[in-house]
Image 1 (cartoon, rainbow, N blue to C red):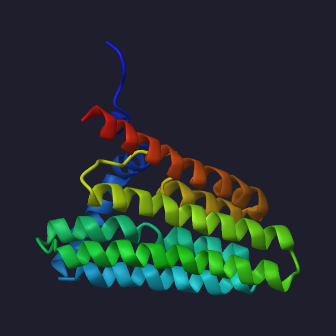
Image 2 (cartoon, rainbow, N blue to C red):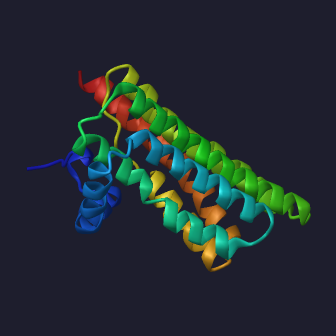
Length: 203
């Protein structure tokens, strides 16, 4: 009895996906019936994040948060649509991952612009730390899988980050949220590094 493999634990992301299936499945079926291409949904999600970043930069956090809440679920729909319509392709997966990163970059760029324009040093610093941490979380997984290791674990994955940002924007508590993201994204990256190291030593 002993140690439990962290990859076997049900993550918050997977739990959210399971709970959202009854809502998303009908949407996926309608989109598939209308022959909507999964890449179109991916790009639409990205454009929604650009729109959100614009309202963040203008200081209209409520609208920005609502836009993320509306367009964020498209990130789960595009993959399900690709499977349902039998349009799963390597390029589609690549496009999805790449635009996911750019979407986050635009959000933090909007925050950096807003805090810079209001002379909020801590806001600018935390925005920088949060985006670098977020990118490192994604990079550690991509690099680990590129050299043959599994690396799906982590405390603060993209789903958790977007959920926190949405809450922070809607309830106007971005500085505490950014501080949390700044710390725990870098913690997650280190957590993944250690996990890959354990796999390496176990071979």
